[in-house]
Length: 224
Figure: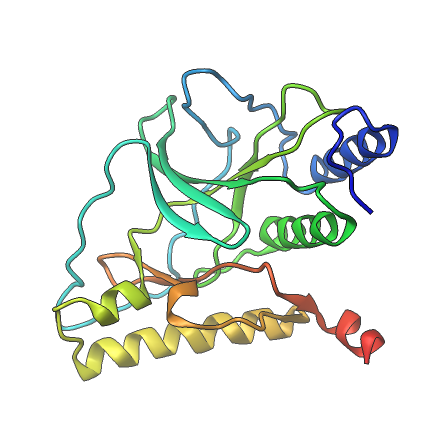
């Protein structure tokens, strides 16, 4: 079943229902818009989580600072941009999810991933800071979600010329296990853990990302 026609009554209903559900996932209510200046921002009052424990390593991972407003990652379900918060000049990540109503399976996948991102609150798991309100709530094809900006991923670090010491590996592994313990205790199965889905910063902080294939445990038990 396809919903590619923006004027299709079923798509209009889905658009309204999906965005109406999403507005209740992040507090305070969504107020951001899609401005022509391509500058995006997160909601007032949203605090970026800081690690409860300082992760230490013998030396920092060397990374290049992201350039202004440019794509920093591509995936099967969208592209991620590094953008500027116009209110305070901070850098955030903007993920564009295109063709969210292309079919029913795609629509369910996008909503499931966004719901997870909005509920996650852990130092080693990526979470959503905001979802931008589309110009027309009853007719849109793309969803833009704001997250914390991470400088690289573990795959890029592994294939780079910089060697990783045993202490680096221990710090990364500890954070991976810590994040997975949180997800599993919340009843979430990631199902796609790989270096490319483990974001890292130059201070060796790691966050699990990309929940496009993730499922709630109860959904898995019902399907089997």
